[in-house]
Length: 105
Image (cartoon, rainbow, N blue to C red; front, top):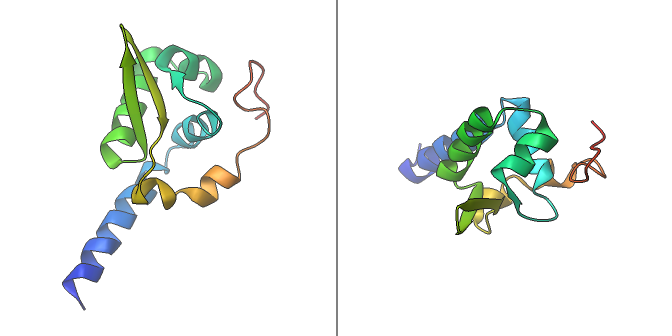
């Protein structure tokens, strides 16, 4: 098998493994319409700040999310790259209202 195909398969497996945790899918869904801070994401998803930060770090390292700093606050958003494009099915299945104050999940 072609080396390039093996590399692509390994990358795809890495991206897919990120979503083996349902909290990470919820995090992705909360960021569909706009960027949010770690505390906003933690509140919506219902996880601690520490746990949320760990999930966000992994998703950023994998290339699914990107971040920007504004003072002491870090905002996360869905990256505009090939890796994030592979997540379109998960993004498109986001339940309506998840990013609101009273998420429906």
